[in-house]
Length: 270
Image 1 (cartoon, helix red, strand yellow):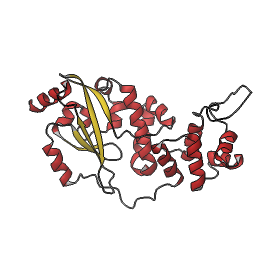
Image 2: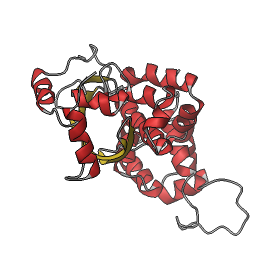
Image 3: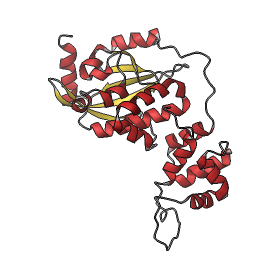
Image 4: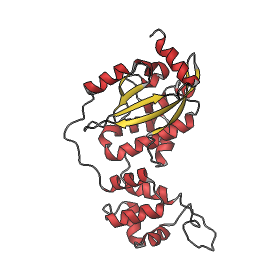
C-alpha cells in the first residue's frame, strides 16, 4: 500500500532522528550510536512518559491529546506545514462520500483565456493539470492539460532537461505531495504507489518523510529555443471542496525572461 500503516509513528521517528541532541539541551557523556534524540530523551523534553511515547511511535496508541501534539511539535521544531501535517496524521479526515469534481469552474477558465501572456494552470490535489493558458504548455510540457506535475518530474526524461535544478524540484514535489496526502489520502494514494514502484528516487524521498509546501518562489526552466528562463510563481487555492489550486508564473518586469515570454506569446502556436 502507498500509505504506511503507522504514518504518525513514522513521521515522529523521522523528525526525532534529525534533531541534534546537544542543541536540544541533552547532555550525554557517552558515545552516541543513534541519530538525533533517543525516544526517552524526546519524551522527557516533551513532558510525557517514555513508555507512552514509545507506544505512540510504534503505533500502539494513535490518539494523542492536543497538549501532547503541541509539546512534541515544539521539541521537534516543526515548521507550520509540518505542524499541520502532524495534526492531520493524528486526526485523519473523514472519508468523502463522493469523488471531487475534476471540472474547473467556468469563471476560472475565462480568466485563463484572458491571460494570454502568462503561463498559468489549475491542478487538483493529485497535481493533474486540469486547465491552462496556451502559453503554459509551450513553456513547460508538464503544464499542459492531461499531464501530472509529479509524474513528469520523476518519469518523463524531458524533466531533467526542463529543470536545471531538477534535484531541488524533485524534493519540493515530494514534500508538497506528502503534505496533501495526509488530508486527501484517497486522491493521492494510487499516484504515490505508482511512483514508489517506478522511481527509486521518488521512493527514497517519500520515505524521508519531509513535508512542506512551497506556495511562492522562483523556478528556472530550460525552454526550447529560448534558453533558461527565471520565472516567479504564486499559488492560489480555489475555494470549494475540489481542492483545486491555481498556479501563475510571471517574470520580473523588463527582464530577459519577460521579453522571451512576450515573444513566445506572439509567435505561432503548435
